[in-house]
Image (cartoon, rainbow, N blue to C red):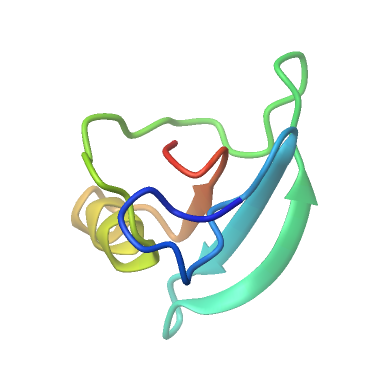
Length: 74
């Protein structure tokens, strides 16, 4: 799905995460994610018009090595 803040970027989809790793924030691909089996253990909310940069910066600021985007706004 397109990111809410930038329609030219992909921000996951239903039951799928676009995952980025801290080492240069490279795209680590699309991973499966479900309510019963979350791929990443923590969630970051309140980022407004989500973009890949906004997500990766928020995760880095909070000490996370991975960032994942889902449904275009999570």
